[in-house]
Length: 511
Image 1 (tube, helix red, strand yellow):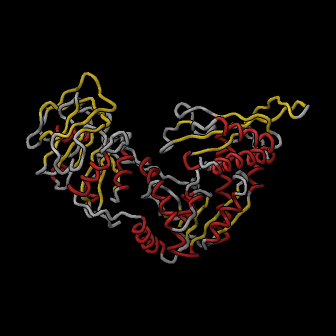
Image 2: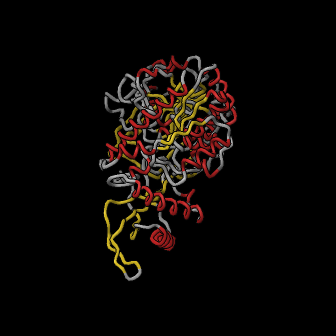
Image 3: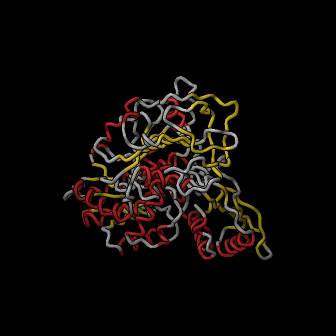
C-alpha cells in the first residue's frame, strides 16, 4: 500500500492491537511489527512516525528488550507508551528506579504543559496507568509535560526531536482523552493527512488483486460468514468470473443458511459453486463424540470436497482466503530475535500437489474494518453484523454424537433464539449468541404426561475481541418468553437453561 503509515513496535503489551485499532479509526494506516524487526525492510515505505507499545518487561532486567542505536538516529516522531516511554528515557540518559509497588489502574492525570501532544486536552482527566519502574531523573532535552498524584513524571517530551512518552495507555477507553492525544500525535506531530479510508482501500485492493492474479483463476471457500463473503465480493469486483467461490453444505450449518447465503451471493453476481455434501459429512461424523475428532473429520472432509470441486473447475492458479490482520499478528512470534510466521490456512491441509498461490485480500484489516468494507461493497446491514460462527458449525454445539435428528432439534432452537434477539433489538448488543444441545435428558410434564426429553443451553456473551467475554445480562422475562416458545414449538425439548459463565475461565463455545 502506498499510504502514509505509522509503525507500531510491539514489546508484548496486551493492548498493542488496540493501539492499531485507534490509529486506523483516525484514518491512518499502521502495522504492528515485533520490536526486533529490521527496519530497513520499511525503508521504501512512507513511515511517518513510530509508536512503541507497552510490555511486561522491566528495564532493571538486563535481558529486557531494547532497540538498536540506529533506531534513535532516525528523524520521524516517536511516541513511547509505558515500557516504550521508559525505553526512551533510559536510552537518552535518564535514570529509572524499580517501584516498590506496580501501579496499575485508573489515575487522575494533570497536564503540566499543553504543547502539541496535549492541545485541546482537559487540564485533569482519568487515565489508565501501568508501570513498575519510574523515571527519577529526566534525560537531557526532555521535560515533564504531565503527572499524577503518585507519579511526578507521567508524560515527557523532547519537542526538538519530536520524541514523546506517556506512562499511561492512551488506547484504552478508560483513558478519557486518549483518542485526542493519539489524534494530536498523528496529525499535529507527524503531520499526517489521514488517507486510510474504506473507499481508498477498495480502489487499491482491486488494483493489487488485478496485478497479482492477471488472467488466472482464484478458488475461494465460502463459509457463510462475513470474512469469506466480503473477500468474495472484493475478488469479484477485481476479476469477475475468474473467481470461483465454493460454498459447501457440510450438514452442520444453521437453519436455511445454505439457501440464504447462496441466494445473497448469487444476487450480487458472484460466480458461486454450490456443493451439497451433507450426506458425506454426516456419514463420517456418525457416532463421534470427541470434539477434536469432530473438528478433524469436518476439516478433512471439507478439503476432500473442495479439492474434488477444484478438479472439476480445472486450471486453478490461486487459493483465496479471508485471513484478517489479527490472524497475521498472532502468527508472528514476538519472543525471540527470529520472526517465525506460522501459516494461517482457513482451508488448512490442502494437498501439496495443488501448488496454489495464496491471495488474502483482507489480511490488512481488523474485523470492524471488514464490516465497513462489506457495507461499502453492498452487503446488507443484517448480514454484515452477523455473529461469529465456528468452522465446525453445529457439530461442536451438539455435545455427544451428531445425528440428523439432533441437528434438526438444535437448528429449530437456535433459529428461535436468534429471531427473538433480533425482534427485541438485542442482537447487535451481543457479540455472539447460540444454543447448545446437551447430552442429557430430563424429566418434564406436558399435558398430563411425564416426558423424558432433551435439555438445551442458551449462550449469549458480550465481548470486544473474543479474547475475554462476559455473559450477557438479558432480562429474565425475555428469557422466560424464549424458553416457553422453544419448549412449545420444538419437539423433543422440555428444558432450557441459560449459561452464566464468563471467559475466562469458561470458553465462549462449549466444545
